[in-house]
View 1 (cartoon, rainbow, N blue to C red):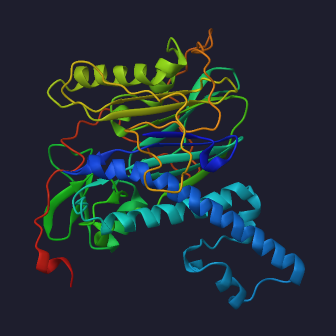
View 2 (view 1 turned 120 degrees about the horizontal axis):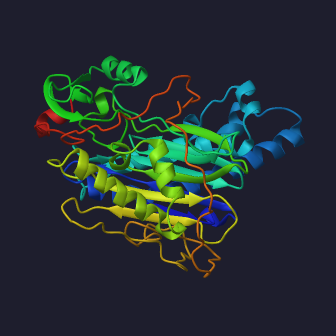
View 3 (view 1 turned 90 degrees about the vertical axis):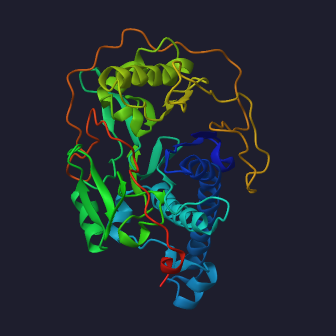
Length: 409
């Protein structure tokens, strides 16, 4: 996981991300994506902003749109840019359109780069990624896999409630299943876990991946698995209090409302994420005492102007009786964000030109308990969320047999 303040040297901008690896080398894939993806996103965002400035200047000077030759000079990779309908573009702020293209390009380049690595075997290993950029009150989210983003906000009555910001991209979603089947991949659940749809190769009962999108997992990339992110936008208001990013180990045992209650009732903001991880571990051991505790990682960003508004925690040792946690290092700074070693620290990074050294802020008192589980109305028109209390054997069940001479036709 990562938190980067003043993202891309932009004031009032923060990047947050949580990455959940799976497969034999999943931890290595997750770490590489965590270290590289933010840099790629920042770079593409800068390129898109400069391209837009050039386009505007040329348009103003010429009084007309660019011809094909002009466009090719501005961007050497124009075919990767997203074509956006004019009416749709007018409905969304400019920052969303620019960041949308940047997210799509950065995710595409990141996955392509993973394929070229020789020191990390990504054939049967991969990672999820739920990330967002918050600039002022604008929030743009890019999501691949089944990690999730949830917003803690106040409803009309003043009660704290949960709003799910992302869709869990699993094979049970109709659109995802249709794409997989069109690509000759198969989707079905095992008899002993009928509630967990999995993705399989055309002629082999492997690998049984429990998500429809992921970085890596190249054994399935020709059969419907993609790394294209779902991108969404939200304009934050004064009623929005915090955003929680967490891996599926949290959501498999806790509902959205339970997560929001735990964060809101934490003794301090700096301990909020840790309280959530500890609650999830207890829930795992209560509900599934014979199962391993799934990986739990949390980033919580509080949205007011107080200086201490970040909380991060993770549990990466399944068998430990205690929850291990790493918090962001206050004052950490990267002078050059352009190189591959710009984010050297493990698991959690907090970047910024200015970091306050003030103490913990205690969460607000008198928070009302959230009402019964409220139905989430997502922009896609249908509510699709992770099944509560899913006890799956693994994100990846089996590994396909690798035959080098048959890998490429």
